[in-house]
Length: 373
Image (cartoon, rainbow, N blue to C red; front, side):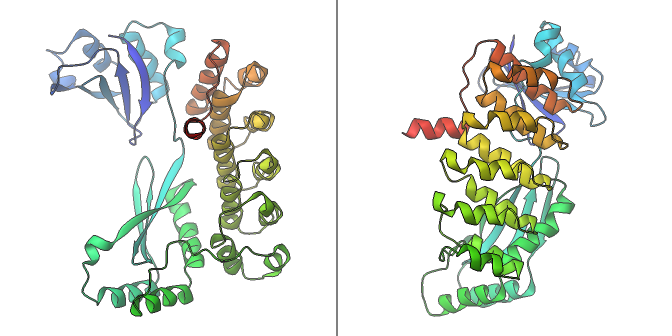
């Protein structure tokens, strides 16, 4: 057996190792130190690695479970050695870390009324109830006898970065800004009249830049942005102004909008966001640049390899893996000793791809976009 690829899983203590051979259909085996006697030699060798708790073998992969006190940086080279691979190969080949540092956020809605928030990271999940006026609106809407359990839906509310306990109050503040009591009242009133449901995003008018800047209440500035129609290049002055706002939530939303504009002329706005004082804004800018996939952004992302945040450095390395050519090699080699394992591995993957002569394919999102043309 040979390793084709190593992938992370939603659990930080489990790695998926994809193999070039497949077990018979329906066959699977769990191994641990107590049940290693009848295991194949390669499985025994893996179980003997300090820090490995168990191995689950099914189909064409094995799932490795580690003791959380041990580092994958120490374990994975030994796993590759168990398969007979050399040290150089074991250092980088095939490790994919596609969602490093992300926290997925969701909002549960019933007939357009938000009920609760859910934050999901690789390690944990957290839920938050929304204010009393949302719960009261829910009770009014549920009184008509509909099956509210079936009608409740989870909607994506974007990716955030950081610790759940830090993100949660900020996210709650954003939702309350997007859904003030008067908006909830409009939803209930429309439902009472039998009108169409007001959607998660109410498309309003595009704000005038000067009027938007002069609005003193950040919640109203947020609402004006959140409810505007999909952004176009002509909105660039507004988005640029929003990047100067005191509220990080507004700056992050401006970055998300900028990332929706598939035109190289929007790049200065995203470059500006890459230098934001808040890591979530910088990382979101990196994600947008990756999705857009413009090679013109390579110099800025090379600079981002030195960002103080590991999740921004990782995104920069991932972008260079997806997009850069050999002009990026000096900067990548300088970053190859990054103290963070995930960053280092992504840098090494970029170096390996470029030095191996493999053509840059762009991000998965860019590949999908190109395929539709």
